[in-house]
Length: 332
Image 1 (cartoon, helix red, strand yellow):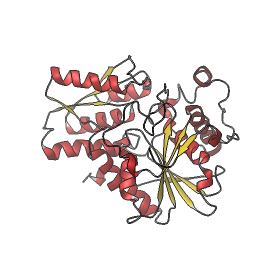
Image 2: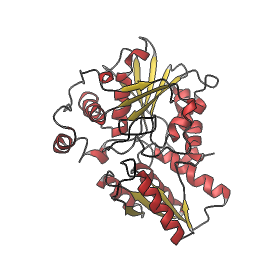
Image 3: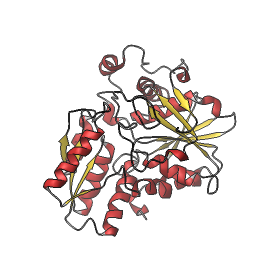
Image 4: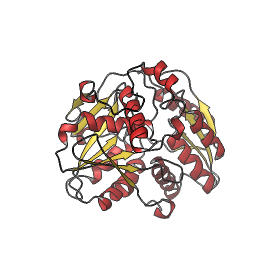
């Protein structure tokens, strides 16, 4: 069980003007390393310590788009482990700087995998490095049951305690650790809330076509081993340009600088607005803050070059996102 003394109290923020229901964001940027991945990292490291696979002075390696690398670097620094982070071109320079500030080493891949992403390439590099150095311990967030366990035991419980009558919980799908943890907890017995899962276009997790993605966080070009599609009931896939528009609208309208995953999750909420009846309560995750995305999501030049002029600079999104989103009931 993860040590709760290493985590702050939960914080929630109301979001007005997006849907008719009551919408609140669960802010995860308040964790010591700045994202929801702090809980994942603690759970992964503590599970390895309990099993004896990670011993004092050991070396840890992981593939990540940024946030888990930051969290693992911080926790490894505190507990005396070495850490190597394998990243790809989508990682922000701020994330790399934070990993290195905690003493972590960064290895980069540049070649895309067969699905057009980088995940397969990152994992192949880890396997190659392990062959050369068998002492490297791979936390393997994609297959490790300690990943969803962190969110079934911590994140979901925080929501349930704060909002015992919540009708919906909205979560993004990256490694699917948070999603699977939520689906384990919000099962109709421990808490009645339904779960809406959000992914980005270009990700193959919910069965869509693979394609390039530019915002780290959600999506995958390789199905994680921990993913159990049969548990899904409500899913939505949104374009990244709508995620960017949501981030910029949230900053200008609510004074909160969020990361790209938050924008995707809010775009999913708007796309599926018909699910949420007036008077219901919707709790959506905000996995991290926006400081690491000042050169991308909040940079006009980068947005123009990447997505064109359609993305809002901060005005409330007026074009229904559902016109662009693909939705489904479960994974087939």
